[in-house]
Length: 323
Ligand code: SF4
Image (cartoon, rainbow, N blue to C red):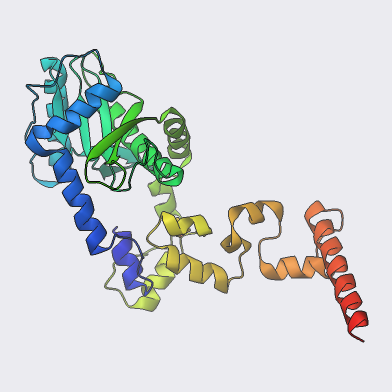
């Protein structure tokens, strides 16, 4: 299911996607990094991650073209096996990887994977945000690290099928424009932590069949359904919107509207939700604060009542001063 198409059909199109200018700038930077058979990119990989390896003068760049994502993933796996056996610098430009997510294959396309002469594999992520004096915006680097960690996990599934199993390096290479130029520079990023977190999250995901089994008979998410029908189908899947969704999910605007309409406190952030314990809606919070509902021994309820009393006292004091 394409969530961007679904969001548009629901009347809440996602705000994802770069401006045309940023997109073209990113593309032209990536083309520059990979020009001449990836000579500059491979030089950076060697310099930053494998300085004792031979120079990548005679690198291989296999053709990964195939029909459909499954075909491309199979072609990538074959190219990785061959490159590992060849023991030569090899650049896989936009390989296709498959990762099992909740029991369903998800296809992923890293910017590049490099096979080192020792047979190990490195994920390369090319970004268009600048690296100033060797460091970049930590939030953007963090997002790139989380993205690369997913690629590492997918690559490990392929590596496990190679005999003997290949090694996937847990330090990926982040390539960015140097300062405000169009010249590439790079920095290794250790993604062990992000990889472990992602692996735990993937293991905890409810399997798609279990979610599908719980849906009402005949539920369909076809984007050409009438909007009310489609909305009802989407609503039949439980969702817990939080502002963090805005940066990660195409359905965020739709879920935010629904969450606000229901008065769900998660729409104000997961940390607030955690502090409010069992109080899930704004109405419940207000009722607890005003003493018309809620267990007074509940620390969240007690804190809300104290806050309400303080507010009332402050307002009363303010009114007295005005008189
Ligand atoms: S709750 Fe968040 S992650 Fe789930 S579908 Fe809605 S926007 Fe996407």
